[in-house]
Length: 219
Image (cartoon, rainbow, N blue to C red; front, top):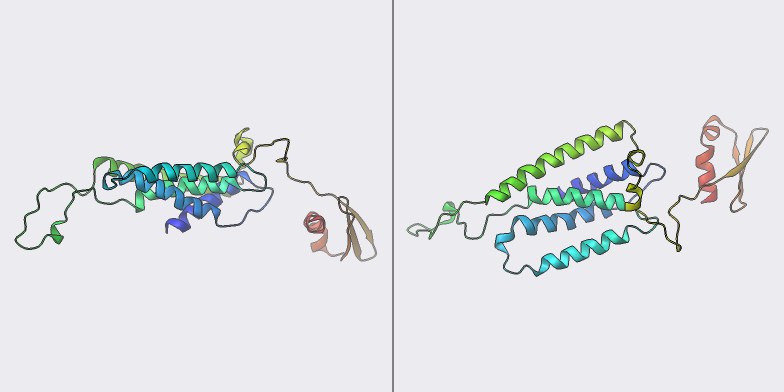
């Protein structure tokens, strides 16, 4: 459930920012697993005697998110999946605190040395806050998506989270252009960038999908 919901959250965020192309893959869900590992360490802090894995995990997360600023990498799916997984970890991966003994597991005649509560107060607070943020985030994201909102129009710097231009590469999407010629019942398309030509039947479907045919021809 965590994997699927985190992947869904990553796809929503990707769709709200990247509307001129299609991104596929499981990276959003995988980043959700990384986020849930981090929140699991935080919410179950008392049961771990060795805190070193936290630094290792943070380093892995930072390196992977930093790689998302390269071109042709959908870092919005990574960030959305990571945030979803981070919140889901507080909900799904909460464990009893160290020293808690379930009365159902106590053998007959044995008296538990102490009766600690199952969870600490901060665990309950994180559980409730994360659940509220998840429900609100998914609801708002779906509403904006169904309304066709492009968040880039409301955030002028957000595109840098997915790609930072440098002298080595450009973040601009490559535009494709084709020259079209109609003769008889045929449609001739010629890609300007590579010179490839293709003849298609002149139908209503092909006429309405000239840009898609051009993208396929130039690709």
